[in-house]
Image (tube, rainbow over all chains, first blue to last red; front, side, top):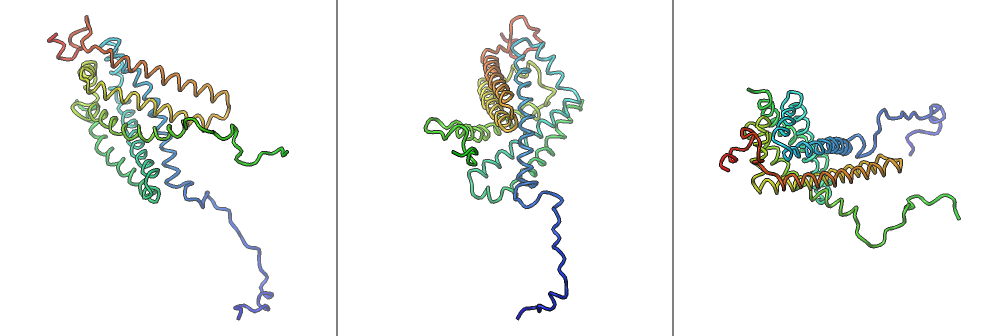
Length: 145
Length: 148
């Protein structure tokens, strides 16, 4: 027995269905979610660390020139501005390290692929814990007497 | 003969035999990554967290470390693993974003050249390093240089 008789359908003229376009891209497991943002952050932190590494190899190479040359350049690392830069560097390294281990677990372990989203938040938690330990310690070294 | 190639037609044809360098690059990123987590966290702890942190770093501090073969091996491993890891990562980014073939080639050559030059430079520095160079100001040297 049909719920609506044919006469009712005729009596209510059907308006065309309204389909609103989504405000944000949606409908994938990846886009705009933890998977995508971990990938974006991994690239940004990776490039930042790479350029620091190039400079760091060159500044350390000055130990082969003379004690004075090395000390003069390394003194420029012991300024308030560079202390902030060192915090950013350690923050970038810590994220890249923890998220890199997450990538390995996703690649080699079925559990990892299934729980990649949870593991992203574990990465963020470990990153926050490490920085809670490091930031006050480094700032007291850099700014303390 | 069709003018439009089928989707997913490989540009260079399917690889037959030989070493799969992309696979080994993929494995290298993961293997070196695990080791680098240990090496770099250890490096950051000794140089920035322990003792007086960044304030203690000077020629005497680095000289004292590099006089010990343990730290020469540690720093040498870090140099090679990290620079190749970073260079390979940059290669991935260039392949992803540099769409102009000429720009891409220049960038890839630049990455390869800077990696090779810095590997040679860094290796020479840590293997030929003298913590007590003759004629240097004694106050700037590690304390054990006085005994020489």
